[in-house]
Length: 71
Image (cartoon, rainbow, N blue to C red; front, side, top):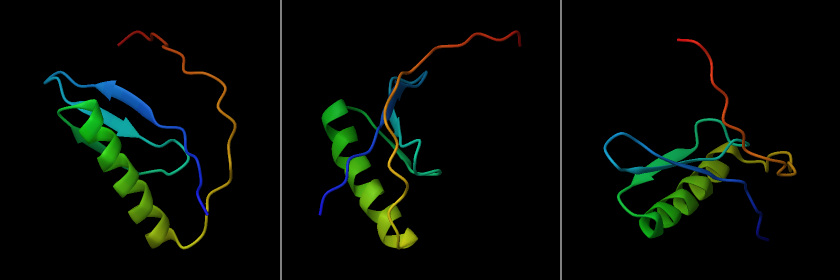
């Protein structure tokens, strides 16, 4: 059985790609290329699910928004 997850991809100040899975808190990874990043996030998701023991609630993707706040 396969499951689908929304993955947020960003780039840090050093140019590394960073992926996180909002529905799996603490599930994230980084890599120098997007191809490698996608391989790593699949591995991270599989390990997270193996450790968790139960599938998370399925969420429908709506949007990603950029929000500014005064620092």
